[in-house]
Every structure is written in C-alpha cells, then in structure tokens.
Image 1: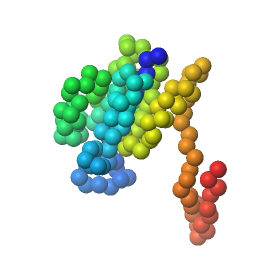
Image 2: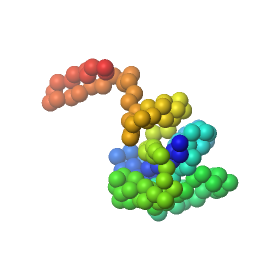
Image 3: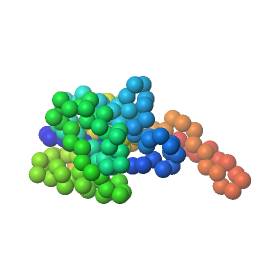
Length: 155
C-alpha cells in the first residue's frame, strides 16, 4: 500500500496573531512546529512520501527546513493555494501520476498527535475509501450563550 501525506503549511495564522511568523514555523523544543509533524511521518515506515503545501511568503522559514531535510528524498515542497482546499488540490495534482493508494491530509500547526495514530489510520482504511481520526475530548468545553455559560458533555 502506497501512502502519501499532504501537510498543509501555507496558512498565515491570522487568528494566532503572532507578528514574527506563522504558527507552523514557531520554535517548539528546538524545532519548528512543522518539523515535529514532518519527523513523525518520516519516522513511520508506513508513509512513502510527504508533500508540503507552502506559501511563497514563507520562504525564509522553508529554506531552513529544506536544508535540514535535503538528504531526504521523501519530501516535496510545492506552492499551496489561497485556501486550504486549493492547497490540498495543488498537492493532489502534484502526486496524481504517482498514484498513491491513500493520502493523509494533515495540518502543519497540529504536531501533537501520537505516532500510533498513523498505524491506526492505515488499519482503519482497510476495505474503505477513507478514514477520519476522531479523538475523545479530555478538556472541558464551555459554551457561552448571551450571559449563560454551560459545560458541554465531552462524550
């Protein structure tokens, strides 16, 4: 089974409101947030190729990442689009001739997934066209409606 990963990293992080860089390039334990996701996928024997949807305005950040992974021939960095949908579409067009069996789509700003999730997704897609990971919520979620605050059921 040939599995590719698209990492959406073209976003500007407007809601994050950081003046130095988009959140996928912030330093987290001596690596960018994006590199944490790249490393998890690179270290999985189940993943054949990683395609990163980038933003040309982020070249200053991407150059360091390209340098770090230059010896890896499993990564392509291509130009994303103006929206996440356009970025994924550009990546799908880029890998179309490679004909992967499955494509995982991952948000670069979400590096805190356990690597066992990769294996679980591969097992979940057996016999199906797609799979979507779902995690139990352990945090308390509050919903504010006018002046009323309600705690939502986590189940």
